[in-house]
Amino acid sequence: MDNLNNISALILHERKQQGWSQQQLANYTGLNRTTIGSIERGDYSDIGIRKIEKILNLFNKSLTIKNIGLPTLDQLQELNKQGY
Image (tube, rainbow, N blue to C red; front, side):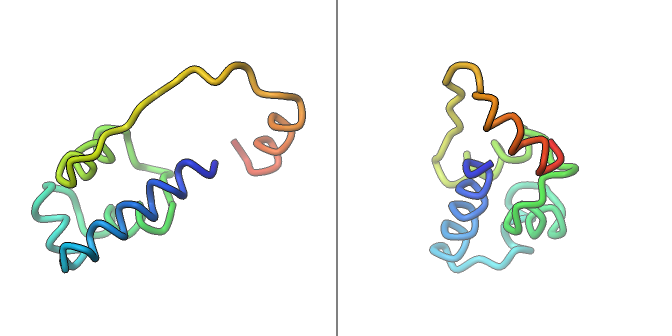
């Protein structure tokens, strides 16, 4: 799930560019600091898309969902190994 890692890296980068702590970003978005930390670590186990959108909107970024077709058997097997 490279795209989730890219989102995590983007959020971390943007937060640091602003010179904000995780707590400041949490305050600006109305989220918990622990949620911000989880997202920046790439732990999305309890994170919904709306929380990601709140953060990205603050940085004038957005998510785009596009149809990339069906996954290959190799991709499905890899996702299965990763527990998805």
